Length: 367
Image (cartoon, rainbow, N blue to C red; front, side, top):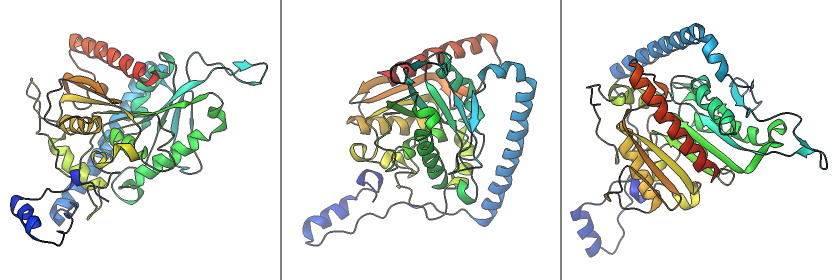
């Protein structure tokens, strides 16, 4: 059922009518996704498949050219679970882990590691878990997490459209948690989800699933899309060097690919901002936004809503309240975590800033 905060409010004339009428007014109709025109759908479809082809070629080239450099970020192994046999997941074990690390008295693993399950971005359309290899390897080796980068079917069509990917990841996460090769070394009291962009949306959706919501301790959505109703959308933001907001042209394309016609846009698995924190999501969420990203506004609105703060309150770029943490990273755009800069000095600064951000994320997850 849609939450009142995510449907259209009553106007003054409707409100006065309620005062004089004994019968209740019908509930506001939840917003639904409207199918674009035939011409637009054809144009979107051609663009999507062109983007898919170009992205596949680009990443294959990058992996070939930089194979030696990327070797250090590879997972310990990959695994497909029977629930989704075509989706390969990437498993990273901490550098400190050894298979012989066993308590001799109980014949059980003496060291337990927190588990971080990561969900890659790409507008629900592009990419795969290899996108996050560097991040995942860092969290495994530097901060001693077991990290699993999970895969999901991509839009458009079939199980790649909403809510297919939510249930793909839900089924895979359940399999990970029951995987005997991992359960012996996982600290079951510290299981977390993290996701970038579309992956941030999916992390907030998956944590609501009945089989998982009581098992996930924390979530870190990084520059996530959280509101498809349009009620909390921020303005597109041009960066100081004049670059347009990355999602200005891509957003409508990705929305069309992922959301079936007539979908209730206030469905909490699609628009997590409409969820009830107390009953549907874990109590610890660390939202991270990018200053020059239109998604920054809606993520901050959701953070304030879940923390019990007024939307209009001036809380600054970083705060923590009632289990909710917010950080707006200044001077960066959407997907800056995965986009190296050409200028050597700027790239050096980006890496240093990311090092600090990732340390903050790891410390928060371990608290």
